[in-house]
Amino acid sequence: MKEKFLFLLLVSVAALVFAVSCSDDEGGDVEAKINCNSNVDCNRDSYCDLDNPQQDAELGMLVYYCKKRQLCSTQADCPINWKCKENEGFCITNKEADGILCKSNDDCKDPDYPICNLANGECRSYGGETADNDNEEIPGADDYDNPDTEKDDDPEENDSDTADKDDDVSDDDADTSSEPGLGKTIMTENFEDGGSKWTIVPGSEEVTCWWISSPTSGPGEARSGANVAATNLEGNYSPNCKDLLYFNESITVPSEGKPEISFYAWVDLVGNGYSPYDYVEVLVKKSGDTWELVDDGLLLSADTPSSPLAALDNHKTKITKQLGTQYYKFTGDLSAFKGQSVNIGFRFTSDESDEASGFYLDDITVSY
Image 1 (cartoon, helix red, strand yellow):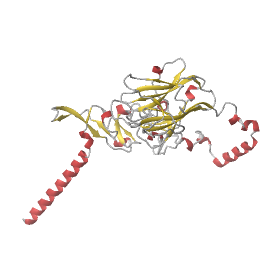
Image 2 (tube, helix red, strand yellow; image 1 turned 45 degrees about the vertical axis):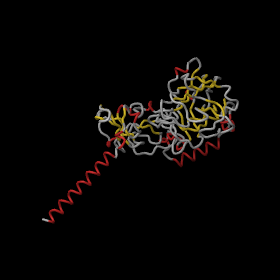
Image 3 (cartoon, helix red, strand yellow; image 1 turned 90 degrees about the vertical axis):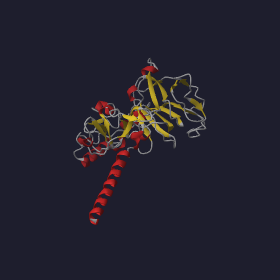
Image 4 (cartoon, one colour; image 1 turned 60 degrees about the vertical axis):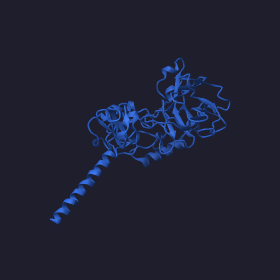
């Protein structure tokens, strides 16, 4: 009898431990207790569970809560009507995936990753020529020079042929990279004159969201010289901003070379890759258009830790996230505007809450 009692006691303890363990795993979903009205109210790895309202005893009404997303490594790990966001490691709904994951090469705007991998809906480089090569590591732009690698049947022979051809190149041909008009700077700006060539268009009369002078907040200094253009010079930026800072003079983008804009920025903005609540966009306005017609920011790359997405949203058109360590270089390709006269602008947007140190802009260059 005593042995039977001990056996039942052990079984009861084991059941209790199991119950607590399971409860911890589900309720380790602590964020499920955060009230929400949309996914924006939740952390990136959670979503607003609008299908399962729950009664809130204190409020006396049904409310929605954030819920942890299901983890995944491939599409097979996600339920029906969900997609695996492989680079983040969890499932997102089909509705969320629309506009984030690609459906064809036309959806891949980054020149470094122009091929849509239909297996996982993410853009990749020319490194893998077939769509079924799902596990291939996506190389950076520096990892290849010529996408037509399948033509190189015999690398050694081709290298030899190339070397022979290089020896036969005439001096005239070899000097094409130094032709007049190539590799030149069109415009530079470091705001040392106080921004005399720039105009600020406020989105609201209630707050000012762009300033040009010497900063005492954020980095506490300019990258070069004394002045910067910043979302605030003496503290956190304001809420409810939608202000435009633009260069007054038109810039003619050359038809040759690779025209681009580059600049340095110190970034401490509230947001993430999927939900940039506060962000800066680089706008390009064609001559004759108005700023209101420019809906999308310029596609950017960022020289930041680990990857460009350390400072950009997933579309790579919005500068966001809380880096706040140093000035990083950002670059935008202007090839789409070759031969056209354009204006360059920086638009800062912030929501109604959760401000940070902000965005500090310096050393802008347009070159080709």
